[in-house]
Length: 355
Image (tube, rainbow, N blue to C red; front, side):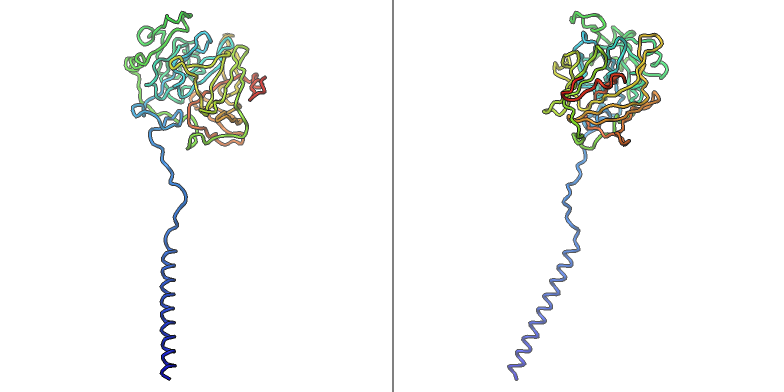
């Protein structure tokens, strides 16, 4: 009997211990499961530095934050090459002008690091309208009647070589070229001009595009490794994709586009080819872009997509949409915006299908 009771007691004790241990284990498990899950998502890295509103890159010098951009009218006649300072421009607009040629407007958010700018040429009214949304300080040497009228109409702060030729510009006679291809502005000239003219230097600058959050994140299905664009019988352009640098170089007049300051090819992250109605003006010489709306192409990372663009009022910014009507997202980086007459649209070809 004692032996039997002992076995019963031992069994009860063991059962009690097992229950106690089981309940403890359950409690620990419940407590453990109540902890928040560990996320496998990497923490979002916030960009460091000041964002350049014209390129989307976070590389704007602290001293240039809140400063107005400057825009330069740049000669694009082949005899004027190489141009100086264009590789450091944030945006370059290339537009048809009289005689079937094109001219450039180079815009800089940070103009403090460029040695020389030029050669400087006269203003045309279409360039003024493209500069207005950015509230630029407009630098040029002379202008058409329509160009001067546009500067006056919109109250643009400008620095004109016809007025300040010997004070804020210089002529590089060592080039032995026609005089209109030899007029430049140095960095020292520019700083003196900005101070001497007492132009307001501060102001807000809107973003040029809807930029992607990450560099090189925008690509498309269709290839654009070599893009041929015919603007006129005189101007034929090729954009060549550089696989190493993941950007484009440019050929025009069968020559590489070179920056005279660096003696190196100009590299372009984003290329816009925009088609527009471009009739002659009343004088039968100058041309007039509609700058209303149209179609075109966006090239980046060796790929392309068809886009639409619109502007309308002179003070409105250019906006870009995909074919489905959504706002176009653009890779951070510099850009080259080339306007082409509508009747030359079919002369734009891609890769080896040269027209």
